[in-house]
Image 1 (cartoon, helix red, strand yellow):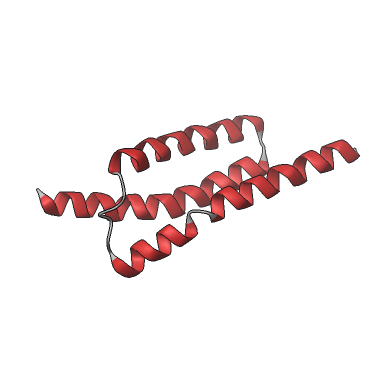
Image 2: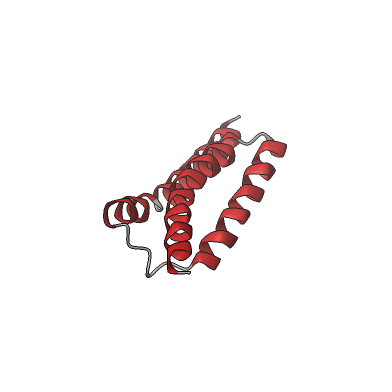
Length: 91
């Protein structure tokens, strides 16, 4: 029982830290609308990976993994949308 709690706490801590790391980029992108230093390919591949991690979390019914991936999709997806809009304007 104690090991399961420790495992869950480690999962939540890792999920929180990696997920919240996207917040500063999302805020900066929303405020400045500048995506010139952001790679569309990197964000596209990352979002696809997060979708797979989210599906994996659902299969395992791992709440830290599910919650982290939902929030990460929102933050990173916001930046991705701005980058796509900026890329479309250039062509």
